[in-house]
Amino acid sequence: MKMFLGGLLLFLGVHSIALFNRDWRDAMADRLGAVPWKILYSVASLVGFLLLLQGYGMTRAAPTVLYAPPPALHAVALVLMLPVFPLLFAVYLPGRLKARARHPMLLATKLWATAHLLVNGNLADVILFTSLLMWAVALRIALKRRGTQVVVIGEHAARNDSIAIIFGLLAYGAFIAGLHAYLIGVAVL
Image (tube, rainbow, N blue to C red; front, side, top):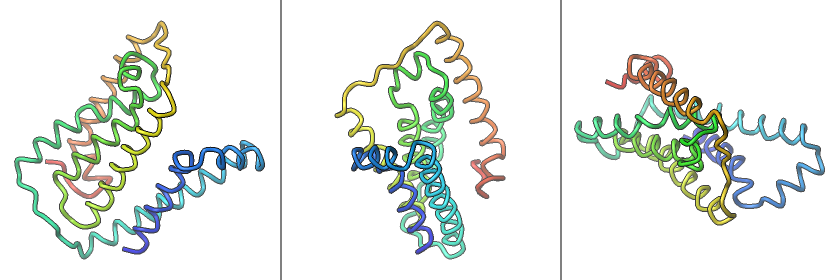
């Protein structure tokens, strides 16, 4: 559990620097240079993520069950997950979908975490998904307070939205069909 919690704190801590102290982050990037700062940021994020994955895997060997979700919540989780992958693709494909969501990565994270909280009742699951949900909510509030983000829709908006939706739904289907079981070790259905 210590490795899991340490990895989670490192991963979320690195991703929260701008949330809690943007001036410090900008000063460090100026002092170190843009490329060294990005390398340091990336390495710290990767180390946190790997510790989180390894520690999370270790907690699954002897899980502490907090609650047993009712089977009906699996259907709700499947519906909540439906827009997650299109939103993730929309992050990189500017269009109406991205403009409407404003922060599609954060919205996808909130939906993903909520869906997983509905169907996972082990202590490590609750810690992981609640932490990521709280982080995404806090970051969205902080970004909203900073001012409105202008998303340029551009001439390829309809094409980009179509690509995001089609590839997002294909990824969703792949995860249901077995990719989740292959990567995570748990079948969706």
